[in-house]
Image (cartoon, rainbow, N blue to C red; front, side, top):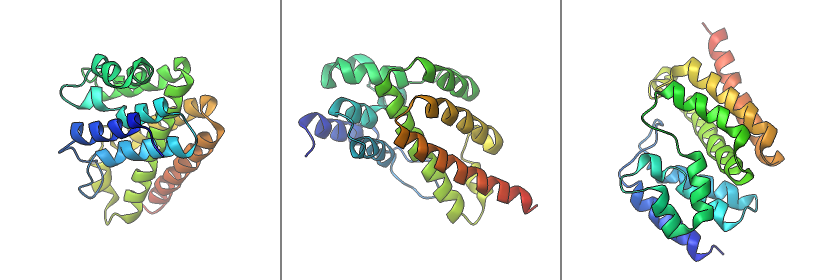
Length: 192
């Protein structure tokens, strides 16, 4: 059974991400992503602070009214510290943010690495599912600011950094998801 802190994180994320949608083919509420990140972490046995941080990992960068101070006040300094390690600076360009995210993995705390790995795992799995079900893969890629080549390249760099630091179960799942994405892209290139 989940704790009151997890319940509060789920309700807060639902309210904070209200009206936001995922980049995928269908109009999927954004909150499903953070719930999946929390579920991945819970299934692997992470404690409530890590699971709550997984559920809240995008609120500061993507939701009005949320700050690290608010996360600390409502969920504790342990959760806020993890969220702070993961929060991107949205004033930077896509390339700068993604490069910075890859570089920062080496200095992240183990709980932040776990959340970052679960986040990337869910994103990769969703991307692969969308590419497999799309009538036009170009339609899927058109929703990504980094485009096809840069997104795949940045994903490969991030997965390589995460593999060196993440729980082996997450590392294997990340490698598998990235390999699926790479196979789809190789298959696409050979069909030209």
